[in-house]
Image (cartoon, rainbow, N blue to C red; front, top):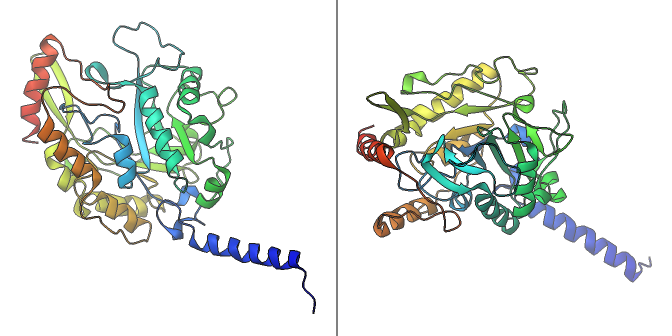
Length: 359
């Protein structure tokens, strides 16, 4: 039987393609490649941008370090700058702050988005989720400007309203559209189709928890989702501590308890309860200080894969280095992250720092 050189080439190409597909890894595991996006559990860092030496910080290292360690979801809060009276629409209008920019100001969101875009570009087999709290009331064009300037737009996935059939991770990776963006308020998919209205696709469990017994598996936001059995869900699992000084009340993360909060006896326990309650595993485990406890291992366990722990997380290395080199000023995502504290706020934060060590 005669086989042309062209046929031999075609056969070789087909076999090479099969070999590549067999070796493909998606979000760190070959098993994830044929899984639809909405069937997996992702570790989501609460206020991912807040990692400076400040009692209001929810994490211990920058977003690129978080992603390198295995975090695949980033919760960000869009805030107006302290001196802004209205929400702007330019690429650098959105600030990343913890409730108020006078307590923790992580700088322009654009700086952090550039770092995320760079990480995504350099890690072509990874699917990442960004969730926005639009506390500043920004219009979609402000996010579009920031995403365009950062380079993230080209990676952003579009999911049509009412379509609960999500592509597999392999399909998202092949298309190049492997960043999923949700926002709680103020979306307009006609204007910015990739900025998805969170409550159309996701619900969340209660977030304002102050002790271990407060964690629950009830739908908190939105109060009555349109399709509760079809959408994904965020399981909020982090604790606030409350510090009251006179008439001022501030909430700060309970860093001192994070080893327990992120452990199997707490984080996994709530995940198992929610799985039973909602009939499916949590899609997003939203936590503080992900490098403490067993969060990465628990996410893998929920996804039925084995977590191979490194000798040391990159976040732990960063945190140790930052602690040893701390000289009173904070470093940032783009070397300009800063903490702004004035007057009584400085005193409150100093007291809160001491208070948080006992939480």
